[in-house]
Image (cartoon, rainbow, N blue to C red; front, side, top):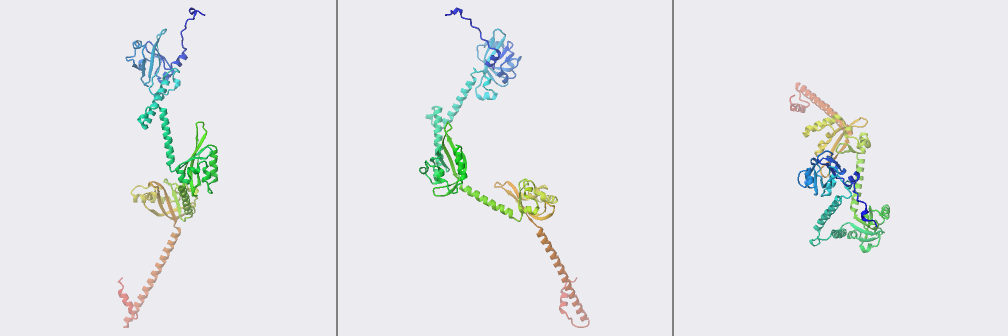
Length: 500
């Protein structure tokens, strides 16, 4: 056995600079004049003003122990705990000062002092900024865990009775989970939607009252059976059924709309959403389906489709040009009558043009001036000239001149209506125009006929007047010869006529 006197003497342990920096990333070294000589990488990143030659008291404030930063202050409290505050970032450093015996150097070995994890996040720190042995990260984790546990306990305590307030958090969470489960079961039982729970093979294990109300089948009648065998019928879409089976076989959820039949044979549209329920290992235990009767909605969609078809037929078969625009004046609808009337195709106009393309610019300017005077505010000579009155809810029907694609012109009677939504917001404008060419031609014919009749009437009246004058002259000649008048009534008529 080796004698104790021959044991080798203990050698002092020194750390190379690289290992020292890793062990103390927040350290700094000072000369006896308390000016920085060096600092750890983490400290330099957070406090870039820590530079060699800068005095300690320009960068940090003393928190503990109290006093002013000086060499005497450091030496007098060398065995005590120091707490320094960075003037700019307010970072707190806690640690101790050590004087290196072989050098006139003071070394501060410390680490940040945090009270909340949010301070670490705000400073952008991570675990790599701390030494492995630094307890700050562990302390913060414990602090945060305790804080979260306290918050959870307060939330749970508000819901539970005072007698259960002292139970452990695990028991409280278990009780809360049980309460939520009971609540979900109660909701599923009372909801108007049908709820179906099957096993992994798709056989029913539970249905709620909503399912019974919808289908007429009770739980006893459905348990152990596949819902499709009970509910699907002649009008059920086979493609939808295949899609549902494929999704179930892959263990994936899906949404679908399908025709089903109740126990009494009533046909109804069903919207269903099916989701798998898995255990912790990912194995499918059940499938849950939530279903709702959408028959009324489907009937409304069918009616709307029929109405839309009728409206489309009316638009396409109308003899009037029907042109609709959005609020910016861009054409959204250009019916076949408009195509025939103007020579443009709908594809050339819809989404691309404004009605101004087939109007005369001078008429638009004149109309804008009329409306400016009539409405007592400026109406600009553009699309606004067409819709200014209609947007006020006033009727706007007047004659315009349309210009066909080939440049020819023809008169139209244009009625413009502004479209509003249920909230009174303008959604667009609708113009209905009828070609006045035939009517104008008929009016011209009528005016010509009336002119001819008036001329003929004047000629006939002149002839009648001349006959009366001749009869009167004959009567005068007879009277001069002392003979009675041949036309006595002429004299009476002549005397009744006003003096010219």
